Length: 163
Image (cartoon, rainbow, N blue to C red):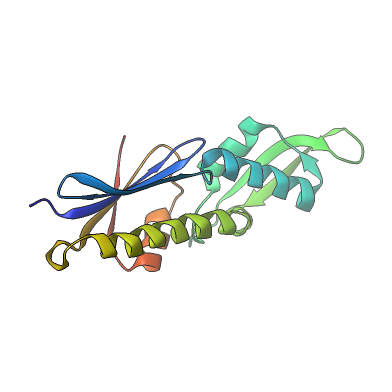
């Protein structure tokens, strides 16, 4: 018998959570907290905190370069260019990983809660000898330290797999 496993696929528009038991899907949910939502959160954060309008590509770069699900020990920052909301002139600011991590905290919490729901619902559907043995994260949009954040939330080990 195959062990029960959870697969969390991080995409651009949706994050898919599937629970497989004995090779069959017993729970599946797609929700809109994904890369595009995180990019929008970053854009809005920079707009409100730094009065700077940035484009989508800049938000993507920020997420990929310094975004994380949990704070990190090293100090990461990014210099970003945009347009000053008051003057319309081009301007640059430096933002830190700590800022981006805080801005993305609601997105991370939503993902963690959705996976917690999948875990609790799947426990009702699987036999005692088939408890969840494996949680795998896949996708190009996985935040740095997402596996650790999720592991703390669901108390299970997490692995990250390339697409």
